[in-house]
Length: 261
Image 1 (cartoon, rainbow, N blue to C red):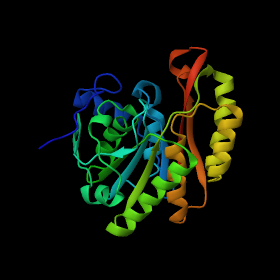
Image 2: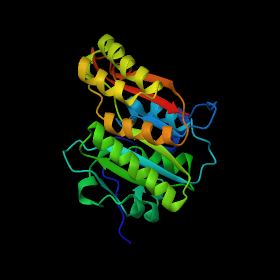
Image 3: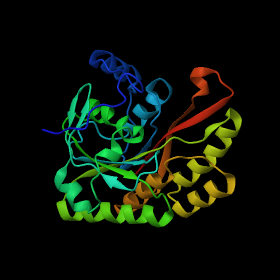
C-alpha cells in the first residue's frame, strides 16, 4: 500500500514514538474549551516553538470526534492547489485519508507536491494522538487569493453534502514572520480580531494594509467560509505565543490557536 511517509519526523517533531507521545501528553490542556469547535487555526512550526499552541487548538474539538478532518495548509514552495488520496504515516501510526471525501472535493491529487510540506504534516500527529478513529482530507493551497479561498470552501461544502461526512476544518497557519516581538503582537492581534469576527474581507484588508505576514491566510479564509456556512457565529482566541518565548530572540514568528464555533 502506498503511503505518504513522515518527511519531517526528527526535525519538526520527535521521530521516536514514545518521545512524541510524551511531548503531546505534556502540552495537552487539562481543561477543554466549550463548545465543540467547527474549525480551528493551528500553527505549523517545530513543536518546540508552536506545539503547545497547536495542542490548545485541537483541544477545542470534542475528544470523541471520529469523522473527517479537512486540513488546509498553504504551499510554501509555490505548488498549485491539490489534495492527497493516500494514507499519511506518523511515528504513532497511519492516519487514513477519506478517499470518498477527497474524490468529492473534485480537486486534483498531487502526492509529489506534498512530499515536504510542513503546513500539513505537522498537524497529522495531533490528529493521530487526540482522535485515533478520525480520517483526514488534506488540501494544500497554492493561490491564496480571496477568490481561491472561496472556491476551496465551496468544494468542501459540496463534498460534505455529497458524502454526508461529519467534518472539522483545520486551517494551518503561522502568523507574523521574523519581526520585532512587540510588532508581531500588534499586527497579529489585528488579524486575529478579524478572524474572531469571522470577517474574511476585513482579514484580507488588514493583511494587505498592515503587511501582516500570515502565511496561511487563504486556508484561514476558507475555514471561516465553510464554518459560517455550517452555522458558526464567532471565533475565540485560545492561545498566542511567539518563537521568542522559547529562543529569546528579538525577532519572532507568531503562533495562534483560534477556534470557530
